[in-house]
Amino acid sequence: MPQANPKLNAFPVFMRVEGEAVAIIGGGAEAVAKARLLDQSSAVLRIIAETADTELLSFIAATGATHIAAPYDVAHLGGAVMVFAASGDEALDRRVAEDARRLGIPVNAVDRPELCDFFTPALVNRAPVAIAIGTEGAGPVLAQMLRSRIDRMLSPSLGPLATLAASFRGAAEKLLPKGNARRQFWSSFFQGAPARAVEAGELSQAHDAAVDLLMSKAPVAGHIALVGAGPGAEDLLTLRAHRLLMEADVIVHDALVPEAIVAMGRRDAERLPVGKRKGCHTKSQAEINALLVELGKQGKRVVRLKSGDPLVFGRAGEEMAALRDAGIAYDVIPGVTAAFAAAADFELPLTLRGVSSSMVFTTGHDLKGNSLPDWAKLAISGATVAVYMGRSVAAEVAGRLIEAGLAPDTAVAVVENASLQNRRRFHGTLADLPSLEARADLTGPVMTIIGDAVAGANFERSEPLAAHSHESAANAVAAEVEP
Ligand code: SAH
Image: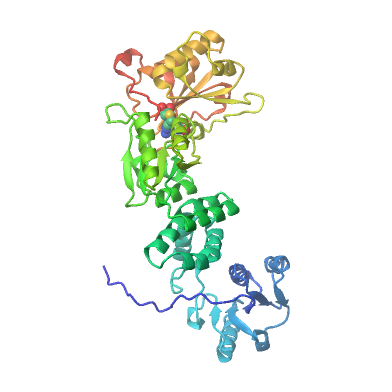
């Protein structure tokens, strides 16, 4: 590998532009791009363009920027703190750059690094926080890639949080001794209750939380985020889930969450798998609740990572109750539930005009009693039914629904490993559904969708459900447990 050059040829600084004039010469796309970039600041824009295209004109109208509709003249640069030569005309840009230099005003010429005193960065704007990415004019595409990566990592509420921090700076300096105490305060401020309140849009609550932090020597409060990991594909994680994973001290995850998603968390985060799969060491729900409470008491930032959506068959209710009882703060971050991923894999409309206008999330495991559960009645009246953990009770589900009056030829779609590369799709009718129990070849999680709307799905890449023989029923059915 070549030795990296540790010296920057362009040194980043943040220039004060509030209320200062910035001149942009040009009337086309290059000028619009610079004007948009500069409009993220409180500089006063002066656009010199004898003819401006419609995009630039509407920018000027929308922002109130000054427009000098005249041929460029050196006098137009007077008093500016920065000049952008963005005319797209090499000779004119060169003239502008030379004029600016003579006047001692730093100049940037679009796409002409040799004429530039400075380069413009790709900008992540969370005013007053700014992250500027520079590649010394070599790689604008690279800069944009880095920009979007960093942008994703940072909460949209970072700006207001930084503004709040600025208002506490004086008080913190007065009340807290320099060193550890002050560092602790700021670390809790930016990662604890004040930050969470700002995130929730509760600015006055954030202020109060910061005052509490400042006044008490209370230990850092822990926090548990119940996070939906989605159905399995890494890029079906929400941006918020990803950000929390990158901030977590501890990640407590279920077996159904793929390693690739857990690995998206902070590298030095502690990772605690808590089951549940047949044959693996698993913790009981009570043990998981106790673990979360304990981590919260230790002041940890915990991500409790659950497959799909945490509030759908995820036993989140019990975990939230335990956290509430123990007085530990928590949040819920939704995820793409398996039913939605399965429907997407089948291009299956879960609601369909004139066919199905309601949907049921259920598990077949409540069919044991004598009376039909409410969802079965809904199915009969036309709801689309998504059955979670339904493989081992497929025959029971089909039998009871048919007995209750649902047509045996009602369409059924089944997906194993929805959203993942290795997914398998099956289609058939309610009468075929019992064959699912016999399929020893299905080792991943399985989602079953039943209803007339299913007939609107795309079955091109799916196999018939009934083709498989029923004989291997005895050695089939891996355990299905609610994570
Ligand atoms: N909270 C999860 C559900 C957990 S219950 C969610 O919202 O999706 C576990 C059941 O979810 C599995 O038995 C299976 O029926 C379903 N499931 C989870 N991931 C799945 C996937 N990728 N493909 C198909 N079904 C899945």
